[in-house]
Image 1 (spheres, helix red, strand yellow):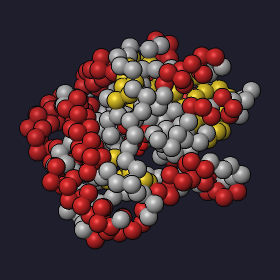
Image 2: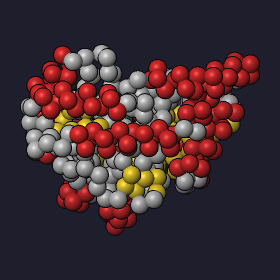
Image 3: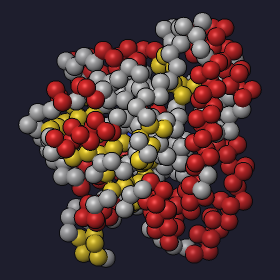
Image 4: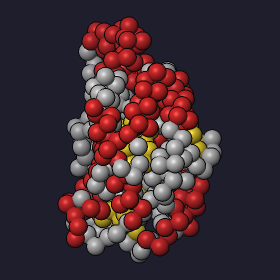
Length: 364
Ligand SMILES: Cc1ncc(COP(=O)(O)O)c(C=O)c1O
């Protein structure tokens, strides 16, 4: 592909010296797990995100799993979430024997439709798990209000939204927990797997720290069955370098997205809608087109990458009952047929965007 979805090589060129210095310092120190860089990353991300605690874990999936467990989610509980997300969101609920309850999405933002949440609440509902999909904050004001009135736990899936804010507050600072992924292609990505859990609650932070380290508060004393889910020093040192640039990276993503939307102003194309006063950080730039396959084929012929996030909504996945799930979520199903994500990353050039848009407009 002459234009990939993400070009991590371009980003690395600029920060390579700093990254190599960091890696060398870890090699010299030889403390590879939960060392000084993890601690520093935890305080730096907590300060940036405006939360009291940030706790490094092994992946975004683990962040969700550990947060849900620390929030007390158990077998038989129901957790309300979005059907239009990566499987990990629902998997983490299922790991605990709880049931994901899928609520249809807002056609403008692809995030959970906040007007449909309350009718999905039952006596078994224990938590809300909104996803800030593609980097756009879900409507946290309404969600926080529903959570308050129904006395539910609130866990935010921020895997795609590092640096996004809603009403001046960062995603990951609204709920009992925020759960981030440092997968390499994320807005803040490492060179391997990694994740982060945020919380303002001292007890919940302590519980997560015990869970990530084999249920151990003190070495070789185990109070609960925990996990091996620790962030390593090499990832932390790399993430600390990238964290210094995250504001600029997200700003460049936003500028690129706005340039796309300007060029793709066409009656057959639905460009992303920024809604609700939040700052969208464009982890993905996702359009809707009626004949998605034709557009994707034209892009492929021009050696331009594109991707469908997500072709099968979670309530239609085999693991959640497939076509027999008995659940119909029309807005989600329509989106799954028409969405197309285009290359987006901070170093994408205007010329590349012009080329991509030229191919799309010609294909329509
Ligand atoms: C919305 C969402 N939730 C959770 C995850 C899981 O994160 P990870 O891949 O770090 O386990 C991802 C990432 O792929 C994601 O996009």
